[in-house]
Length: 81
Length: 414
Image 1 (cartoon, rainbow over the protein chains, first blue to last red):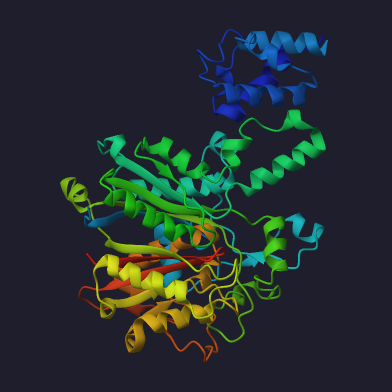
Image 2 (image 1 turned 135 degrees about the vertical axis):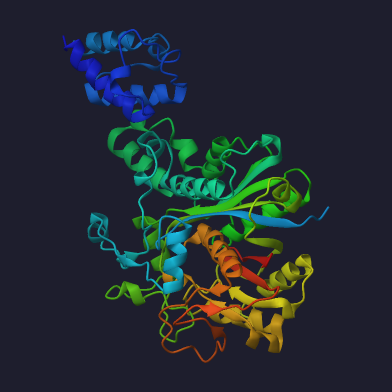
């Protein structure tokens, strides 16, 4: 299984690139919409970039279940595992 | 309803400079904006034209990283110019009713980099890798939309798309919107970022581009007998136009008046100008009529003058038919000699030049004019800027585009 800390760090870079938020703000308990103010188009951009970075598939119907950064890290860790 | 309309803010990012002050200083000094392109793709595709006039300041230097990722280069340049114009007009902290603020922001081609990069991504990596922001980035109204969001403009965000006439047509759409009574302030302008191998190859194949690869600085030479085509440029220009009443109420500084403007179409040929310049001369006449000024009030023209063998003569013929003997008293600047041809942004940047010329009473220079074409006996400003002198005067900015579009804006001193 991939190291969740590494996934978090990689995901934070993707989110920072897309939104301009500082990587330190991208924490496991943060909600993409509520805390990070990420809209659906940005979310899809993050998903597509994460798929490429971590070599995983995140089906569109799964994206709505990824409420927090932690949800995304877990999903990527399992998919990559 | 026809109201007096004034210009209170200017913005630009061009091959001559990243803002209006630096661009204007360069335009008065006479500065060639064209350089040999350093990108790998020039050699990779063995392009027949290896130079262009790229912006002096990369937009990534002044925009945040998310902004550059979410905006096509054309929108980035438009945003840079729009922000400068907005701040220059003193609107950054003004209390405005968003429903009375409009945008009229043009482009010739739109997000061509995004379109073609996305196509490359699709073919190389598959459809999943095509970014969700692709559509709003490539659409020609992308800049108008983004700029309306930036300033909370809710009186409509319009986009003129009339090839190389787009920039001036945007001003005329702004004029119409203001005269309709539906807005008090309109930010108008145009942007283009099409220095990409595909447009370069396509324009080259239609024999429109200069091939002076060994001397890019001398390639854009309007009215010169050795002109051999235009030089592709990129950039953006923006003008804040508002009703005189609105400008006065907030104590704004006025550069000049947008006195009138007109659009006509040749219906002659899809790319070639009417050799008699009928559509162009009609646009000039209508613009002056709408401005309610006399032909003899005009002292300065910022001409379209792209430096193509085919285009420069009909524009002269059109001017001659309108102005007659008064043309001898009109000084003409062909600033594409410096900036290259900014396509859909050309008319916006050249309108900024025209307004600055009236405000500073100085017409910018035309460079590379060594042997003036005897078929074009205009009084061309070359060498040093021309002092326009005191007194009320009118200047016009003309732009013409593939499709037979003619757009002319008339400005007057204020």
